[in-house]
Length: 405
Image (cartoon, rainbow, N blue to C red; front, side):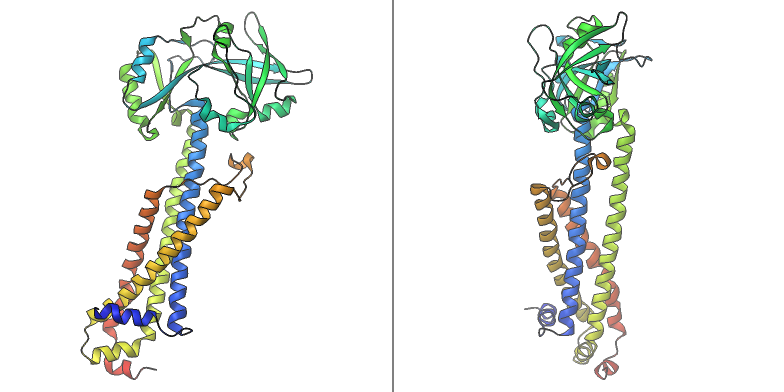
């Protein structure tokens, strides 16, 4: 057994209740708390960002193709969708799937209230599986093979305001010349927590919008494109620009909802700042604790030097001791942090106010690669900090240290 490891192990396994044992336990606890806080913070903030993004993607896709126009009207612009266009877009590398849509502004009218809404018409390509997690009552509307469907899904906020429920019927008035109206049946009520959608969006049949706009079956308001990797939105925007007509505009969802995505990027910066503070505190604790251990072992250092031990050998003893403490703290920190995240992921014990946080519980998203990176970074930073107190070893005189009390 090598001498540095042997001496370090004897120091670590000193008699129970000694000062060294207490200090070593404090070191392990401080590292475990810091690391579990890092893991928990990252997974919660990562889950928070992912939940917000998935809610936006379920309504808008990663990229949106629409007619290039200066008009802000929902009815004026449309694009012709043929089999060649759909096949061409679906065949692009990086595209997962796509779906067509069309918007129509209108008024939902009951006997007591009137609410302005936007009817978003979708077809069989719409990913109802991804959207179903937002349905809190009823089911997603079903559309007939021919004609148009009158079933719709409204938000819980609109339902409360108009005092509507599943299976109720509501009159929608489309403001156009001449005005037109339809009697719609509510089959589902959804809730996302995002005000931009919950305050006004109604999901229905795209053929209903076509009927109101006098469009044929080849016309749509736009195409929502979902990517295999959302991080490739910028690159795919350039690809779509080169592979579509000049009058078709490709818009990233991050530009369409720029305020939300800027807020999420701000969270990324806060994560970096928080990580830096926690790692600094953990490194400072290790410096203080190792310095205390060195000062307590001043007589031992003097004896080793008197027996011919070099400064390098003594530094290695305390460095190994510090790394052992870091390793124990690393194991406990991973266990505590991952256990906390797992419990929150399974049982959702910590609730949130959905009006303020866009979700009703603290979300957790597991990222094992990032957990490994956090572990490696924590070990490197705290281990590097150990070299600072080790510099004091060379300043200890054998004669003075043996007499030190």
